[in-house]
Length: 135
Image (cartoon, rainbow, N blue to C red):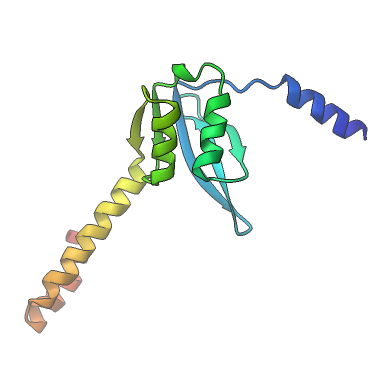
C-alpha cells in the first residue's frame, strides 16, 4: 500500500520533457506491441505506451507540454504514426528512420534481381545467384 501511494505521488510529479527530436517506434514484449517514444537528441526513452495505434499516439502528443517545440519526428514508415504527427504536430518534420528505408530498398533490389534471373539462361542465373551481394 505504501508503494502504491508513493508510485502515485511520483506519477503526479513526473513531467514529460519535450524533446526537440522525437522518435516513435515499437517494441515487442511477450507477444505484445508497445509504442516507444524517445528523445533522439539526448538518447533516452521518454515514454512507453501500451498501444501503438494512431489514437493512443495522438492522445499522448496532445498532452505533451510544449509540443510546438518538437522540430522533427523520426519513425518507421507506418502510416498511423505519420497521420498522428501531421494532426498534432503539423510544423514538425517527419523523417523516415534509416533502418526501414534501407530495408525497403533491399527488398526492391531483391525483387528486381529475382525477376531478372528469370530471364537469364541457367548458367547466367547461377552466376547472378552467386553475385547476390554485389547488387
